Amino acid sequence: MSKLDAKDFNSQFAFGLARQYQGMWTMLRQGIKKIPNEQWNFGKDKWFYSLRVYHIIETVEFYARDTHMGMEWGKRLGKVNWWEEISHEAAALLITKKDALKYITELEKKTNKLFKAYSDEDLLKQDGFHWFFSIFEKFLYCLRHSVFHIGELAFALHGLECERIEWS
Image (cartoon, rainbow, N blue to C red):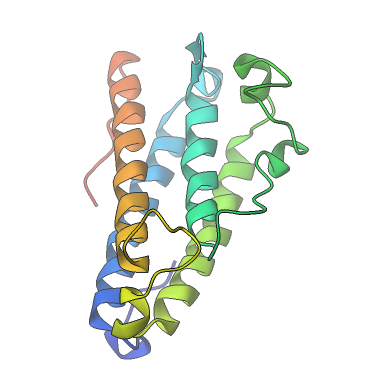
């Protein structure tokens, strides 16, 4: 993704969010690239590496909307609801590294476009995610959620004796 420029944003707060999301996307891309292909679907029970990556990206897509209603969970997996219709292991096998990287690029563009359009006043408004006090809080929560799961990926990489995710 290209370098962000503050003059392209209507809000310094939105610019800060965009910069922090950019760092998160960079770390997630590293997590995808540094796991060996043969370990991509590594996991057990309800935790699988590829599925965790997908969960991070899909959750950002969810919160990049203005309402919690109508999200098509699992649409990239053929609208598979992996927690009800198939096993987590089977769902993990549906996700490729290439698809995950493409999904990240799409969401990075979408979130940057949103962030560029927000004013300070917009970020203080509440949208359809009524349990958050503001759009700003919603995006902070989403970032915190993503980084928590990237930490899980980093721990898995460590356990597999892979190259570590570098801070970004």
